[in-house]
Length: 177
Image 1: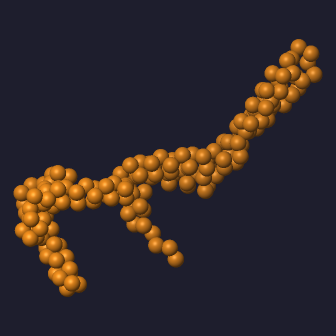
Image 2: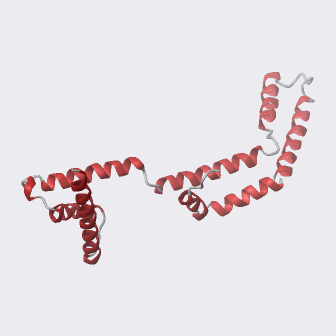
Image 3: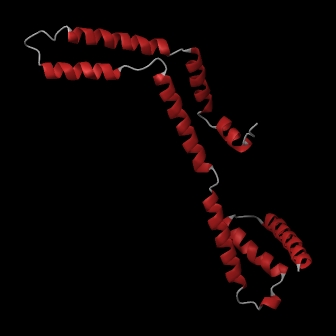
């Protein structure tokens, strides 16, 4: 059994067009619109028959008549064809909207590289033996604040969290050495 990506599902359910999309699905399942489309085809058949009735008339341009008949024949649609096209167009609109706000893996890779470069550059003037967890945390916070504005309380908590992570990472590295 496949797992459902809850984030994607929530984004679909919360999209402003999703209720309309559900109505379109219901109409498709119930065949609400198919009768109308088939009625349209009947009208097109009637027009085609009238045009074909003119084929023996010497005053009618046979090339134009054939073009008109071809146009009518290609204008007919299958019973569910229009419903499927409408469903497809609506879901594509929804997916495009969601993709605009969806985190882009490439963006996070670039942000990570930018962060590492900025922190590294900030610490480059300090001799390696003098680089402490506190200095790394301060440098990391400069980067975070350049990306995410925050108040003093949030900055304090975030710095404390960064220090916590650095200490855990430092202990792990010492244990591995």
